[in-house]
Length: 176
Image 1 (cartoon, helix red, strand yellow):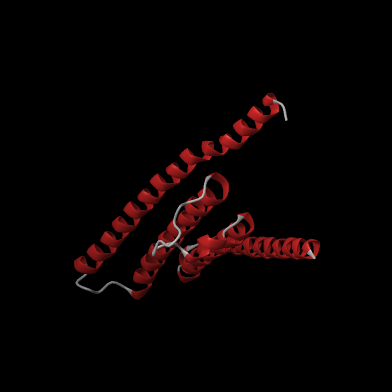
Image 2 (image 1 turned 45 degrees about the vertical axis):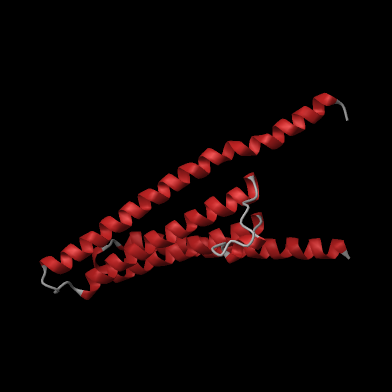
């Protein structure tokens, strides 16, 4: 192979490092979610203290679901940051590290898509549960659209899982 195409190929391969600042930006976003979580937890504590412990169960549940929502989004960010970096930029040298996530050892673009879609469904489910709990204060068309969007997420995840399964079966058949 001549030097020109070889240098072009090296440059194209190097271009994957342009994604590194994107992952760093997601780490900053993760920090913002930690801040929001702590602020919301502080508000809950202050509500309990100010009310003398007489905060309603519904209000508590809505705040706790909001906290769970933040945690699930933070988990999604971690999957994208670590899994995306490992899949698309460079291997992480974590072999034998006691804190290495179990899923990282077999991560690829297909696994990452399924994990992300599952996380999005979980986040959507929490939003929907918050809506149902607070349904008396939410417009009917808003509830309807949230349910429709959630169903679209479910169908999309199912379709991605089916395509991933078909692709894996095709790969297995071609190896035999």
